Image 1 (cartoon, helix red, strand yellow):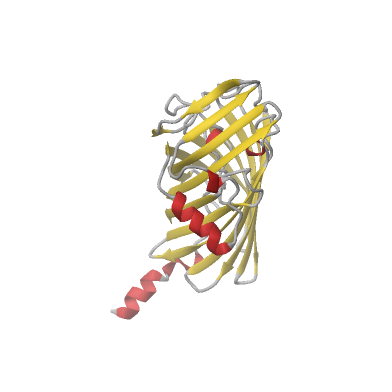
Image 2: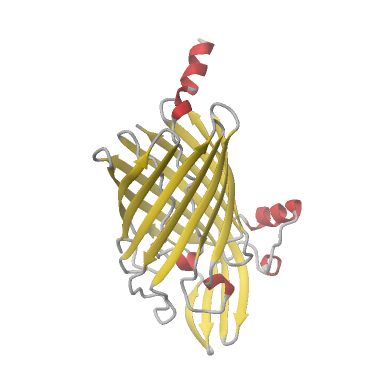
Length: 315
């Protein structure tokens, strides 16, 4: 009986795990369609993933006539379903639900930074578990939010084409369209259509190591959030190293970044570079549990900490 249970848990040795499902959780960028990672390998038939990105941010910034306060906690729950249509084509649908509030993580994040000697920025000067999103310039307040907001966020649809696939490497291209289907508020929707062209690649190095990369160009539609500052084209990228620690466990180091979305001198509105450390645990027939923690390498350009959890299955 014991041997049967162990064999069942390890059936997934050859499962191709997707990258850790995260990207910049900056609440001011949440409504824009910056793409998340796509898997270079198409599923045999279909795949689904339910993931949670739980982030915390607390900062104040000033530059010239601009002033920003970002003190918030966000929880983004996203369901992604991918259906293979043919040998080379697949479609992926993403349905997110997002909550922005004061949260409850501030005390834990302060302790996290102290234990690991990480910079806390202006966090220590902010009231704990407060929601305050503010942007002003030239003495005028353009954004002011102090009440929680939750609801459906913008859905997206991706057409994925497998350019090349072999046991050791794969390359896929995708066209992703983000539609303004979310709750009519800038925290959940930009009220615009955003289109991304994505190229993702993977290369195995022996039995234990795997390199992954992704490059994307996103054309942002004319949204309602600070339209006079919004850029039309944003580049984003990802690089990752996966190490198979055991037959069922993979460890992942992933870097995600993007160019600025707004023409502003405030650091929180500029480019971001984020490191995520985590892993995948494979079990059962095609099941994977993923977990990770993200830190902002460019301090105060993105949320301080993001906790990533996901459950997925490939068929």
